[in-house]
Each structure stands twice: as C-alpha cells, then as structure tokens.
Length: 102
Image (cartoon, rainbow, N blue to C red):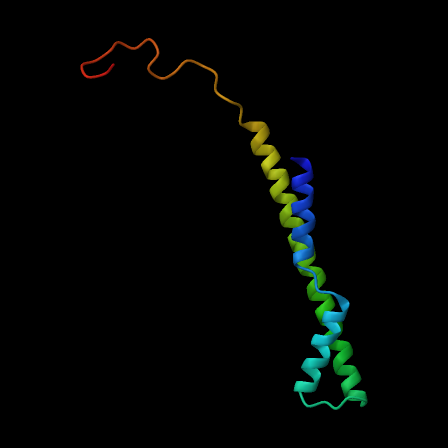
C-alpha cells in the first residue's frame, strides 16, 4: 500500500512538470508568432523572458501538486487513524420484536 502511495505521489508531481526543452520550444514559438526575427537582440530577450516564465510556472505547478499530494496522504492517514471499526452490539440487539419484524 505504501509503495502505491509513493508511486502515485511521484506520478502526480511529474504530471505538472514541463521539460526545459518543451519550455524553450514554447518560448521560441511565442516569440516567432509575435513577429520577432531569430538572431536579433529583441528575439533573444523575448525567448529568455518567456523561457524563464515557463520554467517558473512549471515549478509552481509542480510544488502545488506535491503539496496537494502530501495533504491528501496526511489527511488520509489522520482519517484512517481516527476511524476505528465498530465491534459492539447491533442496533436491534435486545429489543423486543414488534409485529412484522422477525
């Protein structure tokens, strides 16, 4: 069970990540779509700023997912520890039978 939780946490953290290559490709696409020509100073600035923004957003997403997974695991552990099975007598134990009840 513990291995399954760890595997789920790792998969959830990786789901929010964007690789550096994907960040760079996205930054170049945005700058070319904006009309900047490759090789110019303005293009380089555009790519650098968009790349940094993509990496920051990816890191924030990864952190948020990791925080959510940890909160879920801790919350599940608290609920699991707080709920104990009921081994007492049933509700109708010792009650008199009424008409139609068997």
